[in-house]
Each structure stands twice: as C-alpha cells, then as structure tokens.
Length: 121
Length: 108
Image 1 (spheres, chains in turn red, yellow):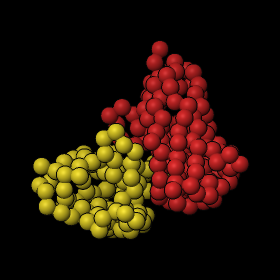
Image 2 (cartoon, one colour):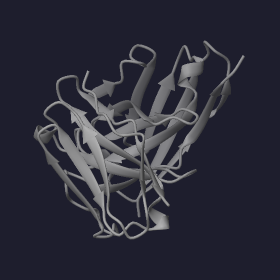
Image 3 (tube, chains in turn blue, green):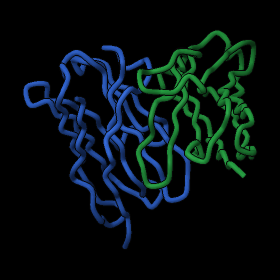
C-alpha cells in the first residue's frame, strides 16, 4: 500500500535553513506529481509547493516563492523541500502528499503523517 | 489569487444531514476535492472531482458543485464524523493549489 514518510523536521532559528525529505513506497513514484502542504499551530491547511512527476514543472505558494525549493529524486523515490530564510510564520507540521496525476494538478490521494518544524530563537 | 470560503463551523445532531459549503468565483467550472482531518491525524480524501468517492469512503459522503458554490453532504451524521473538512481546487490561472479555510463539524 502507499506509504509516505517525512523526515528532517526539527527546531531551527529564524533566518536559518532546513531540508525536509519524504520517502515514498507502494506506488510508481516517477509517475505522479507530489506536494508539500503545511499546517500552522491551530490553523488550516496551507499548500506550499508541488512538482510534476519528472520534476520539470514546479509550483509554489506566494508565501514561500524564492525561499523554498521543491525537488525529487526518482531513483530514490524521495521528495525534498529545501527551506531557507525561515520565519516564525513557517512553523507547523509539513505533510508530503501524492497527487493523482503526473502534472500535480489533481486530487491529493495520500498523505504522510507529517514532520514538525519549529522556528524559535 | 483564487479564494475559497468555507463556514468556520457546522453543528448537527446525530442522524441528521450536514451540508458544508465552499464558495469561489465560478467554482462550478473547476474540479473540487474534499478532505477530512481529525485531531492529530493527517487529512484523508473523502470526495474528489466534485462528487466521486475514493474506495473505503461511505456512501453517506457525497458532493455537488455548481455556479459559485460546491457542497459536501454528509447524511446520517455520527460522532465519528466529527472533524475539520477542507475543500481544494487547482487554480489554473496562477498554477497553485488552493484550500478553503476549513469547516469544523460538531456532532451534538
């Protein structure tokens, strides 16, 4: 069955960087788009970034454009999110999610359990 | 950018029908997806492409979409349906995923 396991979360100071990873199994990773979605403490879902199946198309929320980079390694079935210049507003749980389609423009069929990110001085 | 508006909360007695709305400009022209999130858990897809259900989701969950409003309908609500529900569309003008703010369903 589909499994998505996030890692790399933790505590980081404002202005610093963090890299999240999501290891995928149970499906053909190279055939589908993938996303990162976050949820601040007590808040709703906020989409962060998405990528097509081959990594050629990348999409970003306005709030992270220029600071975050989504990438994927299809040979290792792994999705990454490089987060730079972190602020308190970037705090929350970061979910990796699998899209239904190759171009990452459909429904999010499966979600990981999330990786917590805390930004604190 | 495209905006989806949901009511913050809906309360229903067990056995009644809950309707959760998601408003957006001409949302009827887009495919709408719905997710259920219970406390401390990851979201789960419950309705996709306006009205289809993933395998394993009860028939009590249904959806519709027309004009400027999409609706998630949960019939015969039970305590286990208590959760926050989010709608989602793809904003093709800006190439972005958009989520509604979420609606907390309380079963009285």
